[in-house]
Amino acid sequence: EGFLGDEIFHNLTTLKSSGERNSLKNVTARHLQSFVKNWIKFWRELYSSAEREGIIDDCDLREVWEDLRELLSRWKETLKDLVSVYTNISKGCLEESSDEVYQSRENSREVNMHLGSLLIEIGSKLSTLNKQLCQKVNSAVAASLSVAPSLSICAAEESFCTALALVEELESSQPTSSEISNIWIKGQHLLLSGRAHTNIGASILELFQSGGMSSALNTIHRHRNMAQLSKALNHFNKAIASTGELRKNAMAIMNNANAKSISIYNAGRTWASEAVHHSYDAIELRSLASRHCGTCLWKLDRINEAKNVLLNAVSTSDLFELVDREGLKAEVIFGALCEGYWSAMLLAELSTHTWESISFLSKSELAKGEEMVLMMSDAMKRAAQISEDFHSFAKKFSLDDSINKYSIATRDQIEKEEESIREVWNKRKNDSKKKSHECLETTSQLASKRCCWGYTEPRRLSTSNKTNLRQR
View 1 (cartoon, one colour):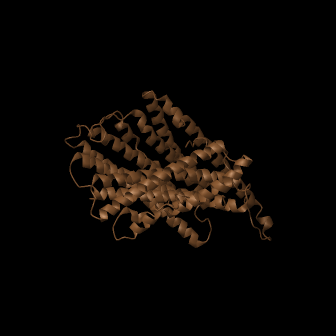
View 2: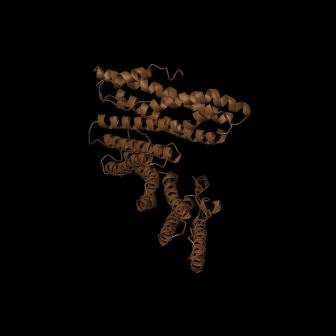
View 3: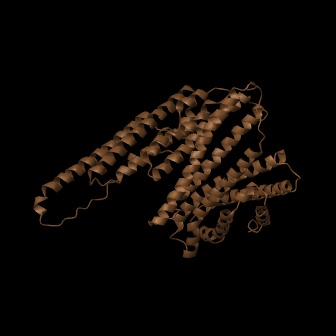
């Protein structure tokens, strides 16, 4: 309550209403304030009641609560500092390009990224809690809890948008120079911008997938949901574009005459080493953004585009070229490699879910099913190739701990899974053909009757056939 009543919100409103151009124009904190109000109500009413009934895990919620309190306190302090800095800029007491202004923006950007990530985590926990308690609490508390996850995700998006606005200001205030330090800073801004775009898009996508957007079937809501998915897709595309620019920027550092000199930002690295790490960061970010991008494209019914993005989320050859270059450790690359694997397995899952829902009542539906099975097969083959690279690489560098950490299925396991799914598909297809033949044989007997054929809901694949390879 002290957080909500803090004067910082009044000062923020005052500064935003001024004619000065600054990133605070993009800071509303409206969703954050709404979430905190809802969280306080949850803490007072729901938590105390549930604790007496032994419904929820005391330690887990208290830990999240303490993390949130700490981050909100840091968020408030960095925002106060930012307000002070912009006030001094408007008075002519500070230069836009000064170190003090840069550090204030960077501190606030970092806190907003951390806060957004925590709010996403809280949204997930509250969504689970809502499912557990919706039938066990009174209607008022249930209504409050039902909106908490979406409020949390909206607040997260808000924080990521603030972080992006601050990165853009850092970029615009950076002097243009051919010095190697300025080239590296340009790359750092590209990386931070790409991460912010990815997190904004992921927040929107999470809100869609969690049911936070309207699920009504009318045309207005459908268009609104599609518009939000398109908005998320735009952010993912910008993130992917920034990774291309980041790799070009890293190459510019490598080709600089001072590439072998020591970095002024990391004493243990040369500028060439900084460039290699930026190259890896670009590959890792691209693989993550591509997985989310593919999901958006699929939900927008842009199936072939989704397939291309998901199958090409990561270039293993580009990754392996970086190993042992300028101090980049072998185990570092596993993050990006696994993103590529998960992207391929996601495509396999999406295509399998699609053919599962086919009713086999027409040739076009059967053709669609065949197309999805082929797509599943392509995805499994890609996953198998990445898995083989992963396990061979881990064995070469004696990285058994990484194998256990990421739990990537072996090529043999993936191929057996693909064969199992194909068997289910072929059985379903043959059963449908048999039923169609039986229907044709009885048509003459039923010619005088008006018949309406129904179809039983398709049998779902067993868990072992679908998801045992999805390790997230």
